[in-house]
Amino acid sequence: MPTYFEARRVNKNEQRKAELPDYIINELPIDKNAKILEIGCGYGFMLQEFKERSYKNSSGIDIDASAVKHCTDNSLNASLITDLKKYLQASKDKYDFVIMSHIIEHLKKDDIIPTLSAIYENILNESGKLVILTPNAQALVGAYWLHEDFTHELIFTSGSLYYVLYMSGFRNIKFLDIYSTANLGFIKKFIRYAALKTYEIFITALHKLLANAYYDKSEKIFSVELKAVAVKEI
Image (cartoon, rainbow, N blue to C red; front, side, top):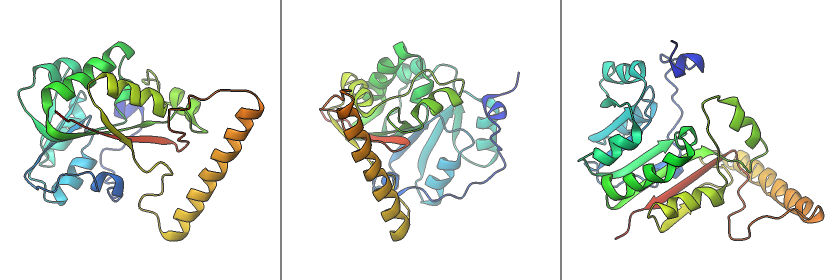
């Protein structure tokens, strides 16, 4: 049976040297000894970034044996798991920073809040942060990203992502880089912002004209990706 990464045509030898986005850098612990966990580390591109930034206690977990082997072969700290929710519920380790990059949309709907609750209750230190990156259902290509990856179970709006985080115990929740301008130069940043802002104004006006309803309390985010950080507060 081919692995997920093989079927998705992800090249494990392709060392993508994309710079770690500012919205992640800005949320990282100042302490280089802080414990960092990447849930769904894949071939370790982000773990490598943490290592190069001198974080001494970064680790990852994944359900793909070939991906974990690639990480360990490259001196990255990664472990193979079989069930994420059970792993988190049983874990004795505590972390200061946990990141899930394009993982939550692969979980069964009934497992999402229990999984996030296990992160909040069991593995995050007090003041620890959880960062989630996931496709945005409100984006122009939202439907495409729901169906492009056959293993996606669902995708989120800002409102539904806020809901599952809140129901899992988090109260300090905010969305990051809502216009997707991180790591762009000034001109590209201005063009990206202007384009998304124009689309936001247009689509909001169109929905009002058609009497379609948005939930007023949810942030209007139209970028292709939702990026949220939630802090554990006791």
